[in-house]
Structure formats: C-alpha cells, structure tokens
Length: 128
Image 1 (cartoon, one colour):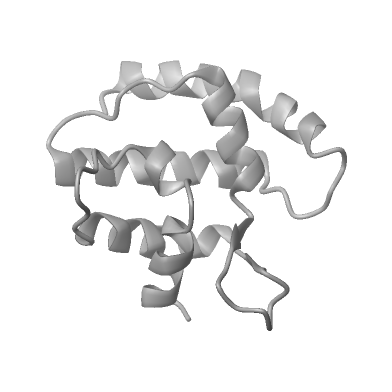
Image 2 (cartoon, rainbow, N blue to C red):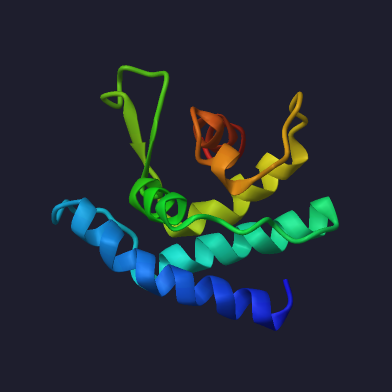
C-alpha cells in the first residue's frame, strides 16, 4: 500500500477503535490499539504481495467488527468451550497460511478471512 492509503486507513481505524472498545462493553481480551492496527497492516501487506493489487477500502462497520473479533475464534472442539483465544503474534502466521490456501471463488478480502472458521482452520494448520 502506498503512504496515502495507509494514512487513510489509519484515520478510519482511529475512529473505529473506540467504537469497537465500547461495543465490547469492557470485556477483557480486546487487542490494544497498536496490536489491532498491526494485524490490519500485516494483512494489507500480504494481500498486496499475493494479489498484486491493493486491498479494497473497508466500511467503518466492518473495521469495528473485525477489531472486536480479533482475539478469539470459534473452534470445532468441545475441549476449549467452542472458542480459542488468539494473540497478536499469531496473526502473521495465520495470515500467511490464508494466502497460501486455495479457495473456490475467494477474493481474499479481509472480511472473508474474519468470516466463519477461516481463521480457526488456518490456526490449526500453523500453530496448533
């Protein structure tokens, strides 16, 4: 991403982060501002590397929803109460695995990455 795109996203992110925090109603686990921003920037960097184009712009509501869900993912296992905690340091590996995985009809948008169990399966392939 060129400088302007990063700066534009960071302005949007700065408006979204407090909304995401408020939406979680003081639940623990939410990534810090810097950690959450870094996850987005790593994703955008890898997207551009693998897709040979910039990631499309995101709506404010999508950014807020993604921030709120970064720290956990639903799993297939009952031993972990149906959810797994994720940490910022996991994301470079999970994101890289996501781009190395071939899907049918996937545009590799970050919204797809945060949908369903995509992150859970990439987590299992890389970190479990």
